[in-house]
Image 1 (tube, rainbow, N blue to C red):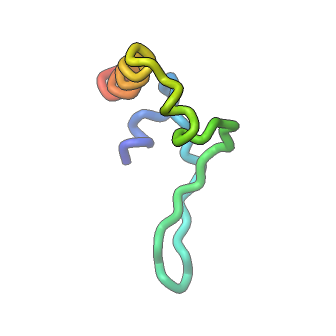
Image 2: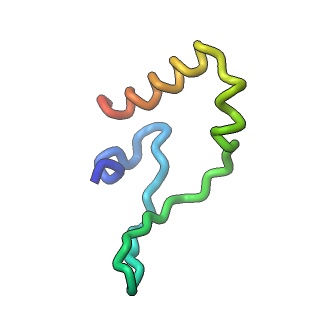
Length: 64
């Protein structure tokens, strides 16, 4: 529901579909492909400013 409300916003990945496993009935979210860097590798290289900017961008999408 949150991703549906944020759809089309800046820096928001597109939710393409939601499917359920026929046996376990566990839902799976299907997103667009995004070429990215593993966050575990990226995090140690980030400065304090980078982290604050990243958090700002995450929070900004919640109020726009």
